[in-house]
Structures are given as structure tokens and as C-alpha cells.
Image (cartoon, rainbow, N blue to C red; front, side, top):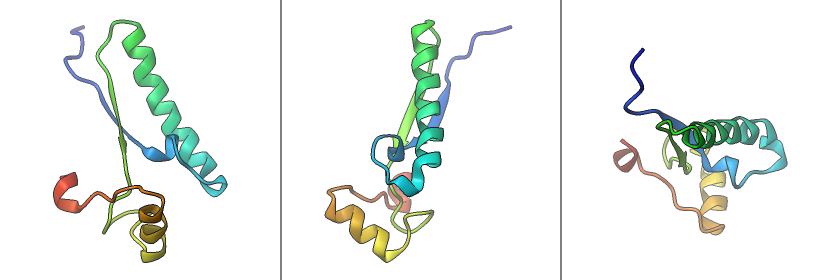
Length: 83
């Protein structure tokens, strides 16, 4: 069995900043972050990327959510930048 040369997880800033309505989503993303930390503590490769909200796609694509995020100082990821 060959060791992995890369191990990337796509998490969300919801692991760090979340509302009570997103507790389950935040917990799932915290689990991804914890897995990366665990792998690193065992000298294994790991990276967990905490994506911010995407401007035009996904759960934060609505104008109300975009406005709230921007008001809180959270930048939005454009499709071009994200890809």
C-alpha cells in the first residue's frame, strides 16, 4: 500500500462561523477539519480548505444571504476565482 501524496478535503467556513439553523452543516465541516488535523498529527498528508460562500452558486447564492455575509465582512467567492 502506497502512502498518499495528497489528501484534500473541501470544508466550509461554516465550521468557524455558523448560525443555529446550520448546526448540522457546521458539525459536518468541523469533522472534515478534525480529520485533517488527525492525519497531520500522525505524520500523514492532509489539507482542509474552508471555502467561503460562493456568490452565484450554492446555499449562499441568494441576495439576502449574500448581503448578510458581505455586511459581516465575509467576502464571496466568484465562480471564476473558485474554479
